[in-house]
Amino acid sequence: MSARLGGSLAGGAAVLGLAGSALGAAQGVTRSTVIVEEFTAEWCGPCYGGFYAMERMQDRWGDAVSLLTWSIADRYTHADATRRQGEVGVNAIPSFLFQGTYFYVGTPSDPTIDNAVRSSQGLATSGQVIARWKLKPNSIVGVGIKFQADQNLSNYELRVHIHESNWYVQCSNGLTHYNNHVQQVFYEALPAMQAGEQFTLIRNYDLSSNPWIHNMEEVGVTVFLHDRASNRSVKAGWEIGEVNLGDLNGDLNITQQDAVLFQRQIGKQIGQPGFNPAADWDQNGIINLTDRDLALEYIRNGGMR
Image 1 (cartoon, rainbow, N blue to C red):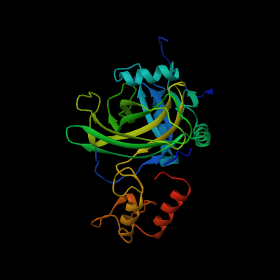
Image 2: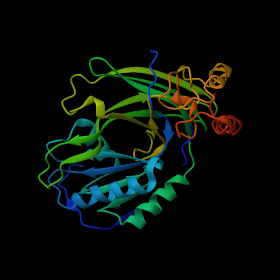
Image 3: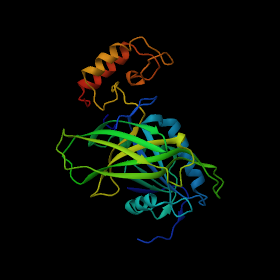
Image 4: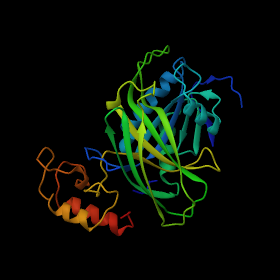
């Protein structure tokens, strides 16, 4: 789905010393989102306030935002975090980046955060996805993505972030866990694409040797479109679910076959045998004509097939 889619000093900041396959279906959806990146460290006192500011933002904005937390300059730092830190030029924590565009050192106030989210939603998008993922045996995460370019693209990549939603660690600043802590990133180069062209990516990511993940049941997947020519840039972002709305048969396409399957879903409710969450467009647990109208609106407005 298409994403719906500067520096300012607010709050305290600690300064760092720096050198320059078929997938199964389960409950969940793919949704477009504003990517909010938080750079923190377990020893950072001011980061305590930043953590709760982000929790409040999640409460206010819900599915409209997706938080990625990076540990830098501490014992939980890994290579992907160091790479992202260097790309965006973080030299003090906490720091926050909204959709790769609006950057704040220190903890922004709640109104400042809300303004950054609204501004991010107004940025032009560059692509759409139909996507889903599944946790497989032996700590394998299977990801399927069909990406469609909304403009001509060259030197772009999809970045697949594997994060742990509630990562319980003992921080010396008093925090007991991080939310949506990035544990590993996979960098998938896109070919040069013309507007309207599509690219399909099917991957099985082996996380069995990843030392950072505590609980695979807490794993989630967030993807953003990255412009390699502008390292900070996030051209579009998506929170990937274990099913995708409209893709009832799980083949990364929305076709007449899905429409036939949808007709068989009318009247079903969550918990009933055969209920398919990919047909529940308004996510209220009941498949009815409202869901049909939302599906038709998506197609008529140029949604991916």
